[in-house]
Amino acid sequence: MTARERHEHTAVSGREHAVESAATQLHQAWRADQHCGLLGEDIRPLDRGEGYAVQAKLAALIGEPTMGWKIAATSAGGQRHIQVPGPLAGRLFAARALSDGATVALGANAMRVAEAEFAFVMGRDLPLGNADEEPPIDQLFDHVSALHLAIEIPDSRFTRFTEAGEAQLIADFACARQFVLGAPVTEDWRSIDLANHPLCFRIDGEEVAQGWGHFALGDPRKALQWIARELRTFGLGLRAGEVVLTGTCVVPVAIAPGQALCADFGHLGTVGARTSA
Image (tube, rainbow, N blue to C red; front, side):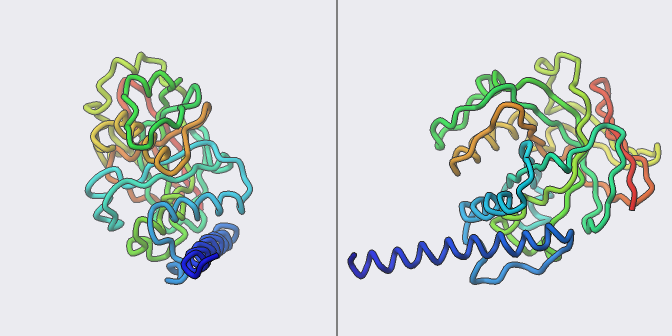
């Protein structure tokens, strides 16, 4: 092995150690349901690729089944808030999925906001294909079996999450925590212009926010297209049965324990939950 090869091998080994150390630190916070400071500069992921590597390692340490993906920062306002240049993808855990009408324990959640989202369920695996190509929407939706209405209740393990940057936030599952998944939409949703579909959010029966489908990357369909390409880029893929939360269609709504939440998607239906401490 030449001196250059030894240097490159040492550098690679050092980054692998950093990925493992970052995942271990985040796992401690996840397991204790606590928040932590930003990762040390020596173990902080350097780019999106390392962010997803830490996320995968963290998921393995948690050891619980995952059931899909979420997309964070799908609007310009959301990106400004957490200081990232574009959307982020994070794994969803089956143990944190709730059904329509369930009670959501906020616990140590520091963000304490709720978001109304469209969620697609994959009917079959989407082949990885060329990472440089975005799968055509029509072809992509041949692999989708259902549309659901959802409420996401995100949170970050980082106390100063607005300063973490995209790589650390990706490592942190893109702020995934709990989500409420409604029943499948029975209307022919494939023929609906989801981008221009209006919706509102109510707390204790009072409307507190209005929104549109296009808040999610211009169109929930385009959001699904984005994550398909994002996952391909990093050697991942969408699998049959997985849920994809495509991003909030309202400005995130502040919530507190003891409230009734309702995301109203008009003729497509509603999805709700109650909050507790």
